Amino acid sequence: MYLFEDQKFFLSVLRQTDFIRPDQALPLLRLFDPRKTQGQTEALIRQLRYAGELAFSGQLLCSPEMLKKQPDPEMLEALDILLALSGRRLLEVSRNPPCKLSFLLQRGEDWIDSYAVMIVRQGYEREASLLLNQLAPETTLLLRLDDLGQHGALTVRQSCYFVVRQAGKLRFYKGGEARH
Image (cartoon, helix red, strand yellow):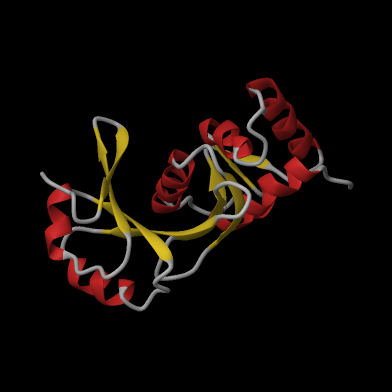
């Protein structure tokens, strides 16, 4: 089946994340084309479902091969973090352990930013610090913390933001400026 560019884009992200919540679909497609509407997003999902490229697993979108698998809540959270950086064009998304999700965002004509999302669970800050210092220095780290107080236990040598969910919203704190 012939796929349009926006459909290919959507499926390329889905291949990396395995699952996407329906409320993530429109913000994701707007990283491809900022003019996308909710109606266009719903049509794209319908077309991909009819073509056998997309399925619903409970309340989540996935490829048909993933129907029997369990979604990774941390991956859905990593996708939320990516989507919070709206206003840019998503060029590439990938899984690069130890990070949950890595991606490139285009900012302007001549500027590309590299990001990596890592979920840092409470009590694992030391291990996370060791892993983080092995990553490429040009990558901006987005460190998802359970609690903002964790930032003091992390040793990070590169540009980073601490990300905490507070009152249901993601909050970003620039490394070195985090306070609790």
